[in-house]
Amino acid sequence: MANPIIEAYKILQEKIRHDNMRLYLELLESKVSTVKAKSIQELSKQKVEITHMHEMLNDNSPNVRISALKYLEKMGKLDCDLLKSLFKDISPLIRKEAVKLYLSLGCEDFKELFPFAKDPDFKVRFQLVSSFIEFYPEDIDKIKDKFKDDPNPQIKVLLNITDNISEIILSEEIPLSLKKLILKRYFESNDSVTVYNTFTEIYNNSLKEMKLIIIKYIAGLPCEISKNFFTKNIDEEDDIEILFELVNRGKKICGNDIVQDWVIDKFINSDLPKIKNFGFRLAMEKDDMNYVDYARTLLDVVEDDLLNGAVNYLLYFLDYTLLEKVPEFLESLSIKRKNYALQIIKKLKAEQFLVEVSKIAENKQYPINLRKNALNILKILKANSFWETPFNIIRDENESGTLKLTALTTLLKLNPEVVPNVLE
Image (cartoon, rainbow, N blue to C red; front, side, top):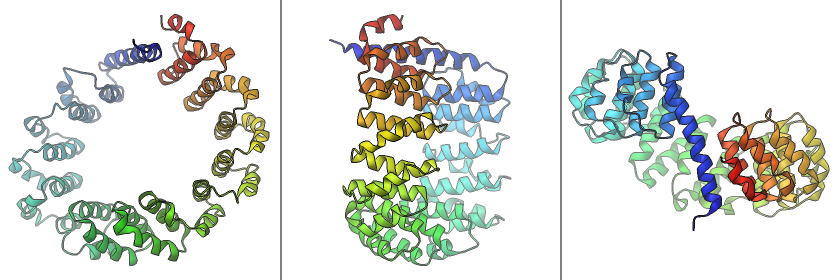
């Protein structure tokens, strides 16, 4: 027997989807190019079949043409001949995308691409080289001679990234965007040990910005290879932002063993909200209650972002003193503080605030996510007497589809008997 809750959810979901897609199908005929492009993008997300999308590749607007091209890519309706027909498009954005898709699709008639070596737009020429390295690295010599007179030094660097990657990455003359691409290609085309040895050498001679990038790549290696890098540099690093990146990336692959108590203390005492909040999270993961009193003092700070870690930390240890702050947070003009209030109400099951929670769910001036959080609290706390709140949201034609779906799951919990009425 079908689950009535699942069936009701599917019915409303399909109704919302059908109404939205019908609107976007109508807007395909709009004379406003931005509207037409947006409609194509939305239809693409839902994978709605559009039989005449190929015609959109001839639209006057490049935005419409690129949206149509990406739609056809997502729907698996591209082929080599179709992409060839776009090689002479007046828009460099279309030419650039066509080159990338041609090679990613496995089209091997390379001679069709050779004219792009003289394309007037640098980004198109760069895309040709970049895509060759990504999809046909063994055939890169087939286009090298085509670029021997190219005026842009970035292309020459890209064509010769195997020469001396350390020298290229440490050079002050190479733009950061190109360095990132070279690192990515090197990471993808070499074994873990080679990458580790090369990248640690670069790291030891790099400035802060490059170190942050290198840490990300070394975190993509197995723990047995990279653990020594993280433990050594965590112990030696003085810059708190680099230390944050080392700990954050390192613990994801090697676990909490690499996180020492002094690191947590340093993070929690930082003035940077992101790092302070991360410190509280680390303390929670170690069940460390040493910061309860300090976290309580942060509940009175002016800056919203400094509250996040403290509230979550205190909630983790079920600190009921948080209830004293709920009225203040609910009355605040800050949406973040209202969300903190909802978190406290939900975790501590504070049913005395259900009227305020219901009002948040009903208020159309509030962001959708805040209202969804309020609806979920009504559901979790089984606030049956507030069933009209989700009921009215579902019946309102002007409400968001995603909010209606949340309202439906709430209504099914609070008063399932009225669900058939609301879906009529």
